[in-house]
Image 1 (tube, rainbow, N blue to C red):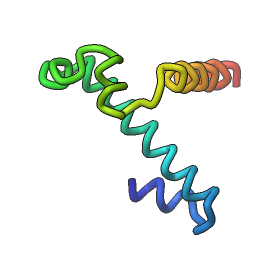
Image 2: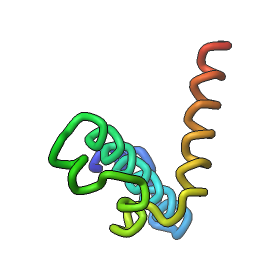
Image 3: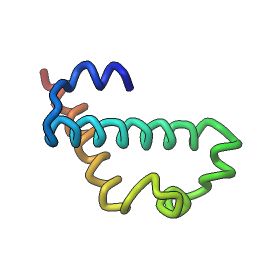
Length: 80
C-alpha cells in the first residue's frame, strides 16, 4: 500500500481515486488467489456471490472488466 501511495503522487481527486482503485483491485486479486489456495478463505468465500455479499466486489461486471484488462495487458506484453 505504501508503494502505491508513493508511485501515484498528488493530492487531487484523480490521484486519490486512482490510489483507491488500485488498492481495491489488489485486495480483490489477493482474495481470489487466497480463495484458490486457502481452505479457510474458501470456506468464508465459496463463490463469487459470497464475495459480492461481503462488498469486496461491487458487481460481476467489474470483475469481468478487470480480468479482460489483465489478459489484454498480458497479451500485449507477449507481443513486445
